[in-house]
Image 1 (cartoon, one colour):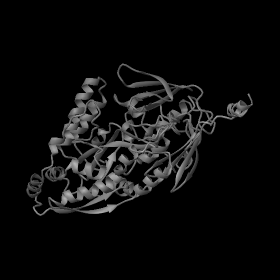
Image 2 (cartoon, rainbow, N blue to C red; image 1 turned 30 degrees about the horizontal axis):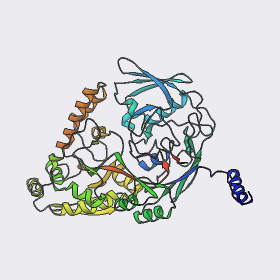
Image 3 (spheres, rainbow, N blue to C red; image 1 turned 180 degrees about the vertical axis):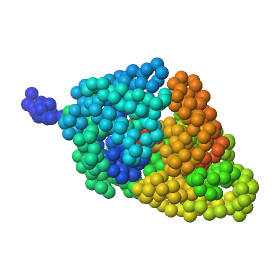
Length: 491
């Protein structure tokens, strides 16, 4: 009997000891730091990485599988002619500063987005909206100037999140939204911190706090992950390290799909790229698989047009621009450049661009095209290339979902002006029947592929690394986002 007392005491002590609490914080790394925190006034996807679904919400939203579901609008009705959308908003929604979110905020948001002075990067997606009417506090009606079959899809983009007039003046540095997390701090050059918003209208997230850490250097990213300084790295920038993480039980590698068409963007408005023969020569000079293997260590899917391979309407048009250096040289000679020419190749920070750019430059050199490579920081790239159109070539991944419509914008940064394509997009926008939309999308893919608007390289894979025990982290990237609303640690 006496011999059992120590065991009994230990058992009683163990029973009385408090259980370890489940972790409720996370540090997520990403390669690019956002230029500011307003997703409604810039093209930088890093803004949405931090803010989408976490801080800000729209009338609709994307799920991980790419489906569009209700957001701040709990339901909607569409008129038979497709010109009127009446949204019923959720009750009891407030912004993080305590002010109520209602139909007036929706009206303010959309009118701000469409204003002449708006700098919204996707303004063209919403130009069919003619009027926004407040019917009552929870009902808002949009009247369109023409049918827009993608309106609910477009409203799910981060560019259309709902903001309030009371807080919009400081939105770039102090974002105030309706999401489950509120903004806490931004230490520029290092991190953004957010915390759970206790007054959230929906299901509370499991996480109480989250930190977005900015690590641009791939070597530093690997070291930080291995040291345990960060819990997850979205879009890990060094794919050559992924096998090492896969072999380590401390980590899980998530491989998924993205909406990121990685392209050799070409300035169609600048000689010599205003010549179809030159653009076609450019396309035939490219060896996609060599770029995927060399820059991405095999992670990526070759594409021959600006469309995601996982989409049901995707066409494999890679044979249209098959690697053929001899054909490329012949086309250049036919266009009046038998000795080739020199152009600029301006590269933003992501490793797919920097590493891929060196490979592309070598491939172009083989056919006589010399490139002057300039490495730009993200803000510089946006200013010089995206807004200033001061470039010959660049490499970038367009991560916006199903964004082939950008080719219908003559003033977009690659300056492609094709009235027939623009008419095709107008027809698509006016069509809601799925089979007809799929047929039009296939026609659109053929047009830009046969015009060789850009050099179509590969669909970016989503390659994230997380610590074992993290649940709910998105493997796929249906939009640019690090959605933490469903993330938790295993008990």
